[in-house]
Length: 397
Image (cartoon, rainbow, N blue to C red; front, side, top):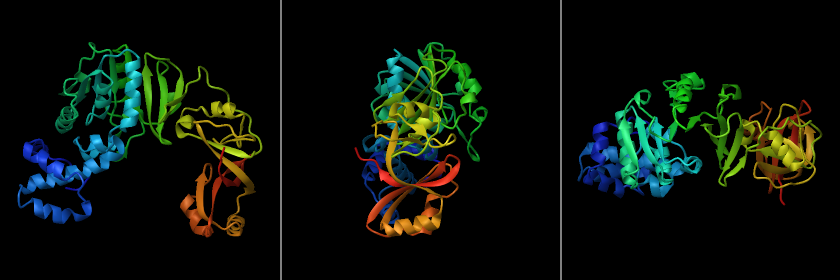
């Protein structure tokens, strides 16, 4: 079974038997490059269908390590779609901590998928009803709760979330499906269930949270919600609409940490100005939350262009919300001049960043052909409306 092939419910049930569990345990460290030899050997002792299912599950577990960590991933069960859509464990744990901090002791997790969020919530001491309408997905979530010793706190129910009574719970968490037959869905009303239904369902509890795509337009955020954008290790992972917290506010949270920007009232954008000695690249969650002005204020900086989310300053001020670069050259965009400059400085390790430029980093590397023993960072962007090249490297305190 390939990683993207659907899991057969009958084969999945076989994996939960003592024979299936033992077989999966034996495959924890197997090398996929040797799969044919491994499958041939195992089929001498086990049914071919069970071996195929176990090998497919072993591959999914290896993929899931990046999201769940090795200790959990190698005890859990997955579907291909479940691995793809599950929340990263660090993000789920942060969010569960916020929920627990609100005094929530019971929660209905609607569209629970394979149970990643339910697991984090249960580990935060919250009793969870996890609901999914797909029989196999619900079975996987139930198996995961048992495998991680959380079955007493997580009840998994196979049902249509629109028919579940959530009135007896302190909070509701919703994670609408954002993928259709043609890939990702960007229209919130094309989610399953639609965002409008999810917002209405959120109103049935004292507290609620809805996980949504980080690209949601700010104008689509309900006035009754607090909007939070979360990044992990510099990658924006999700946005969350919180209800029963601080309506109308926004926050950007960076993991690990957490580090959170949560102004009562966002600042206006600063005036642009000339590029100084340092350039700050705000974290993606900060940019999505429209809080670049807060970073500029914190470092005493200004924008390099009214339409570009780069902040520049003359002094280096440490901040968790942006990566700082020391700039040595500010030049009009010119590939021939850049190639000559990099050759002169013997730059062989070239980091290319861009914002507001049509040139792709790999395309630039092919054209300038960096060679040498030194390293540099080239930032392709606009300065005061003009295509520009900023050259430098990571700032050192």
